[in-house]
Structure formats: C-alpha cells, structure tokens
View 1: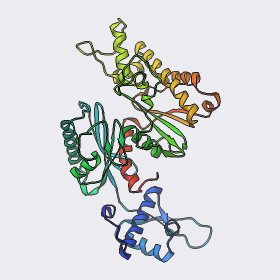
View 2 (view 1 turned 90 degrees about the vertical axis):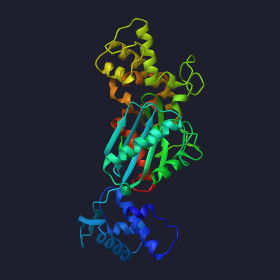
View 3 (view 1 turned 45 degrees about the vertical axis):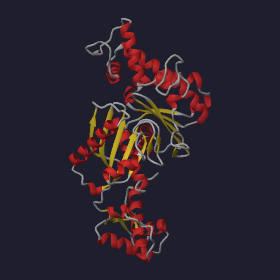
Length: 406
C-alpha cells in the first residue's frame, strides 16, 4: 500500500479511481486514529454502500484492514469496526539547528521509534557542512533498521528563513542551483518537505501538544534563539513566503547590540540562550560567583549549564533568567494586544524552568498587555521536550499525504 502514496494516479481509469478510494479510506482511518465502520466510510467518501463494502473487503483481503469490534447501536445489526492491520507509515525526520542536528524515524502518530543526536555540530553555509549532514542522515537511516521502502518521505526543520512551498532554505545551503528539498529528494530518492524549525515545533504542538484545541495561539520556541509559530483560526500561519513568526527580530530589544541579521534592537539579542551566555560571562568578568563550571580558558559557558544551575538554585543564573523572562513577557504583551490569542505556549530548552520563568514573564505581560485580552490568555509550558521539533518535521510528511488531521 505504501506504493500507492508514491504512485502517479493522475491518469484517471476505473482501476486508479478504485485505488484512490482505497487510499482515501486508509487516510480517513489514519486521521481518526481509531476504527471506522463501512457506513462511516461511505459518508466520508460519498460512495454507495455496495462500493464501500467492495473496497473494504478488498483491503481486508490484501491485509490492510481487520475487524476490531462492533459498533453499539440501539437496534438492528451492529456494523463491524475496521482498523488498519499492522500498517505502519514512517517518516525520516531531521532537525538542523545552529549547534545540533537530530535525525529520527517517526510514525503517523508522531511516536519516535528511533533518533540520534549530534551535538558536536556547527551549522555553516558550506558544501562541506551539507555533505556532513547528508552523511549523518544516511548513517542514522542505516542504523535505524527501518527499510527505505517503508519511508513515505523526509521532513526537515532547519533554522533560518525557509520557503516551505518550494523547499528553499534561504539562510543555509543557499548555494545550490536548486531548492534544498529538491536536492535532498534526489540524494535520498524520497519526497522531502522542509520548513523552519520553529514552524515544525508549532505543528507538533498543534497535532499532539497543548495547542491541539487552541484556535488562536502563540508558540514560543526559546532555546539558543527565539522563534515563534502562530496559530490563527486553527491554522499554522506560514505567511506569504513562509517567513511569518520572526518574533526574535522585532524591535523590542536593546539598541546597543548588533543582531546577526545586521540590525540593532532585535529581541533575540536579549532573549535566548546566546544572549544568556553573553550576559552570564559579563557578570563573571565583573567578579560575580556561580556554581556553573566555566571552560578552562575562562571565557565560555553553555546556556544549557546555566539553565540547570538556575534549577539548582544558583543566584546569578536565576537572576539573569528572570530578567530575560520579564523582557520576553513585556514583548509578548504587545503581541497579545495585536492578536488576542487564547494560549501562549513556551517550549524549547527554557521550558524546563517553568515557574522560575513564568513569574517574570507574567510580570512583563502585565506591564504591556491590555487587561481583557491578558485575562483571556492562558500561559503554559510545552511538554513535548527536546523532540518536539523532530516530531513536527515528521508531521510535514504525514500532513502532505493526509495521514494526520491538519
């Protein structure tokens, strides 16, 4: 059946029409996440009962469907409930960040059945870096034990500007004479779908996270950098070219610091792991004490270690994190006034701080947000952990093949 997803069904014949209807049945069952009856299938596909029975019987004979029970009814014959029979759809999932690359295999329920992370990685806009990425993906695919013929495609979340409709990565690997997605599709012989890493996080939150029931939400991806996904009218907003949600480049930050984008005043210069490292080392240079282990040369520290120290009660770490939380909240208050979301969901590495970050964020929100929109907005922390972006990248594949609800 996986071959159906990769087949060209553009030439309409009676055989391909039946194949499309079978495919649609599988999509409907996969989207629902539970079994379905023949009458339900007929209503969903707008087909006659005899055709529905014929298709279901064929799928059952072919081993794709099985009866898992009977639907309770008040009278008459109880219809059988059909579910997918050991049919697993997999996506090769890749997340590429500035200093980390993660490769995994996820199923249509976005369960991660394999993943491997490389932390001694630096993202560069060079052919050498792209070669290393491709080699690491191939190595992981080989070690995963999942046959390539069982993969429907590759989903990739990458930091920077991405044109998701064309598969172009405009910030990294932009030296190719074709879109990155097209290049990778040729390298791996599977369809490849690319989006910004934070947009992938937002997609995962919408499908399996805390934003599942939110029609209007702001998803904050706070790790080394500051990214944002917007959910408006129950849809992830990509924008006209795929660049929506650049909250980190809004002019809510210090006018003294130059951003990587070439401008001053970007919020991402004040809020995020990179900024936390800078501020921390400035305080150490001024003579402040900490429980964090500083590098041998006394010049560098990883923001992950600062976050852990804050959770252990380190005064300097807590103070810097809370100053950052206030700045984030103050900026978000303006976005609440603009969009009136019902939910702000904070994810990324900083989500583990929870109450340490929540109180200053709320104080910052109160300083800028209007009372009524703020009162109707819940502030919560993501529970997807570090694999949220990886799951969202895989969701790009299943969303394209209509195996999950959008």
